[in-house]
Image 1 (cartoon, helix red, strand yellow):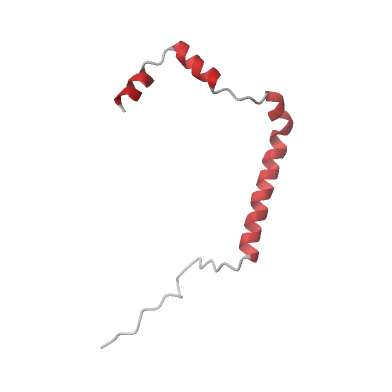
Image 2 (cartoon, helix red, strand yellow; image 1 turned 30 degrees about the vertical axis):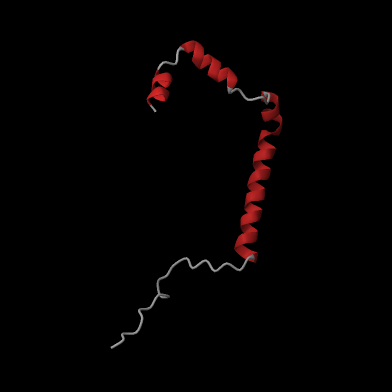
Length: 77
């Protein structure tokens, strides 16, 4: 852990630029401009469809509130 902290603190401007270049996305900005919104909207739609199926068709009992459903066990003597 000490080595990692020492290296992290000793990052110079040159090495920070090297890390930034190394981690640069391979996708061009045109790709994001062209397909970004449709991908986001389709992902939201897919997620909503899956949750709609789970909520309506799987038969899960959700038990949102235990109030009025939980009763104490009868006292045994």
